[in-house]
Image (cartoon, rainbow, N blue to C red):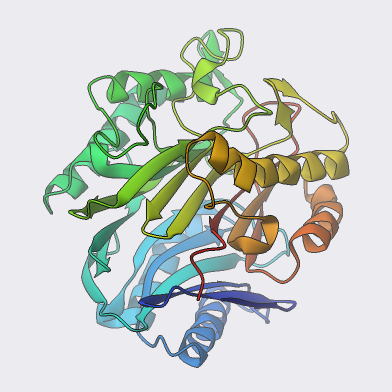
Length: 404
């Protein structure tokens, strides 16, 4: 069962999988005071939702969307003070919340149902949860360590930092199933090329020696496997990353890299989009027993490989949701050799909506509310990876068979 609700400043969903419950919450402050009052107000709202779901102290991952990158250090201190020794893996994203607040926060908690849940908290950069024979590794705020200014060098450095963070706890980089890549001035120039293209070049080079999901994909899968991913702009000029990895000895767990039949795979894009294509799958489904958890990559108004509904944000929002609907559908899972594991938009548990222009917020929100209903949704202002794209949407869904 997925229980959902949303209001003016908060949304939540509770996904009951039997052994465990996942709690998703999004919150914007109800007051427009200073940074401390806004952050604490949003956190208290999330804490109330989590408490009511019976999952006190269970928040393991959160994303903090913040109006100005210069506020991150102060925000980090306020959040560390609030959580104490129960600090989640956290990423700070310089994207102004569409509602006008200084911050908005998305959080995920986990609580035991009929099974046991273990949570190991190492820092704001790493939290590991274990349940149902699976370890979920939440890697938080990761930035480059090199003083170099080029996007390529800084991207490689951030990927290396992420690899080291995982390796410190015995996790291999090829166990990553989902990444988030946030880059300032994403469509801006970088020498004779573009910043996003240089990020893609760095990702291609860094991934060259990794084989993701080896031994866990459906029989007969011939494509190269890449993690699900979002690559999106920020209001500053630098780069921030986070990821989700998975480790298990279960022999009934399959990783299914989903592609959308209405779209060309991103890693097959032509050179006119990027000399090195974006190396990610449209979604990664984790199929364990009778359940599929679906991690939907950043999705936009693209069919085949072309942008649709240019200069029409409502049309783009509908097309984006149509793409997600097709991606997670029963028929697409059948096409990928996993019958009975599909989902619909009603099975979405949380969503992030990146809006390019503030003036498009209300139109985008109206479409999302119509199509998605009550749901924890974060809306933030962010440039998208093509000049003509006005909105990008990502999220997480659970197949019909999952929920109890």
